[in-house]
Image 1 (cartoon, rainbow, N blue to C red):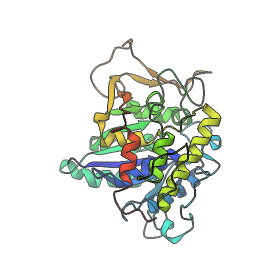
Image 2: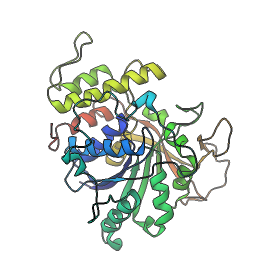
Image 3: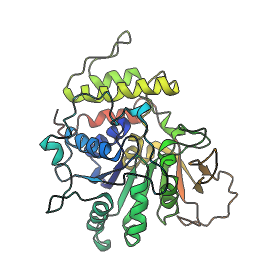
Image 4: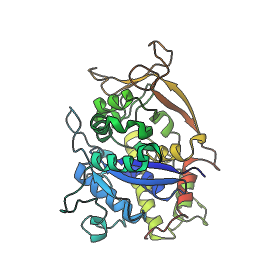
Length: 355
């Protein structure tokens, strides 16, 4: 079994919570650390939510939270309370308090008690894992605005050889979810996204065209609540554990906001979980390599991911500013036996969740 070494950058966010759980529990994934960033909620909330999730999902004790950027590189900060609630995890029950000792212990700290920030923690973990080329490259996975990752690229260019790939959930091919053409994560910090796309490292984009096909239907939701009880007469099974109750509340709130805002009637999409799914099981995806750039100046199109499907721009075979710089997911298998939701449920039987 190939072990994937992963650094996760998140802005929890309900779907980020599922990505954190999968990164903690999948057998072929070694999670090195988690940085938090502004996005679905304020940077203070996303950092606390990350720590709460790490404790609830029984992450190894050495997997810690590294708080990151509180604002985009250039633009005003955006949050999304309509979808995720004011604190980013609206409606979620059963998570420990952010002030509890076990949650506070999840923050990486220096000897003097001050927190270790995102790019410093990211650089140290990647350097130690790479070990001057005798160790392992690291996949940096993003499920929020890519401000932290852009800063890492800018401050530590010497460590890019230690990065196997950047995998991000964001963007869309001709479609948006927070403007006519812009997806939220990219729209929050389009300049950061362009820096990542221009880096000389393989980059993988999981767009909303694909994530909108990975739906937590009522039948899947019921199995998540209790794996042995089927959905009967549209009534969800009773949660068989406290952890399943917490995860159900994640799905339920997200389902409600996606129905009221976007008209999703069958359940919410598993946006961010698909990043970890790609790293763990890339064979589930169909993908093609393109030139991808971010619109930075358009009055109506700022934050749009521009995919050069017809090869209008002359590119070489390199990654980064002069090449076909991005592998773009085209589809993900959603048949019952291999769909990402089933992979999510499989993690429920792994590890030692504290609930």
